Every structure is written in structure tokens, then in C-alpha cells.
Image 1 (cartoon, rainbow, N blue to C red):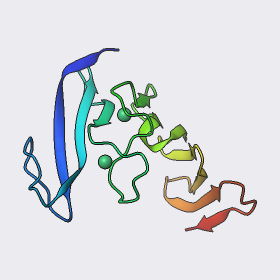
Image 2: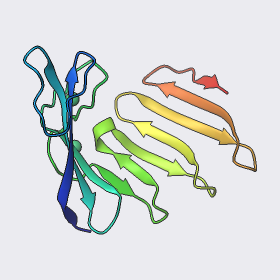
Image 3: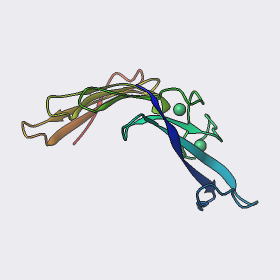
Length: 139
Ligand SMILES: [Ca+2]
Ligand SMILES: [Ca+2]
């Protein structure tokens, strides 16, 4: 598995405006995302996303990396399903026989379990947050 030599970049500014690609923010705005995308060679699968203006403590809802670099962030199973996302601290996504997510584990947050009917319609989402013993069930 190699890394494509080409990468795409997206730059976004706050508050509420987006700067054109490869342009700097106006003086009254701050760059919150300067994203560089790397792809697995000869595929459309993401290998990494790097935020060149990363703030790992941001609460703005912008993109952030816990480890700011261009190393591999995403892993895929043989069916092409992503099962690791290091930028979101997703350590595991398990898929069922319909290739639908069965369970998701997020470091420091908890886990999500999905239940489906035989046709793959989602019946229930069960969320377990951190040390909270009682799961939260939603439809
Ligand atoms: Ca950011
Ligand atoms: Ca990254």
C-alpha cells in the first residue's frame, strides 16, 4: 500500500466564511482548517488528513488531529469499509454481513452498537459513554 504523491488541500476561516482554495484568510479572520488530504495509491481511499493549522484542544467543531502528522489515519477491510479513523479516535468499526456498521469504539468516549432487521433497516442505536453503566438506546 503506497501513498499517492498528489494531495488536495482545503482552507477554511472563521467566523463563518470560507476562503477560496490555496488563499489565505483576510486579516480579521483566523484559519481553523488547512487540510491536506493524502490518498492510497491508485484508489479513492483516504490515507491521511493533515490539518496544517491544527489545534487539538479546539471546541469549534472544526477538523482536528490528536496526532498532527501525515501518517496513516484510516484503515479499510477487504470490503472497503473503513474500520479505523485515528483523527476521530475510532479504534474499531465492526461490520455485519450486510456491510452495515455493527459496533463502533471511540477511545476516551465509549461505544455505539447498532441493531438492524433482516433487511438492514436500523432498529436501534445503543450508546455507552465512558464509565456510565447504563447504555442510552435510541431508534
Ligand atoms: Ca482545525
Ligand atoms: Ca492525521
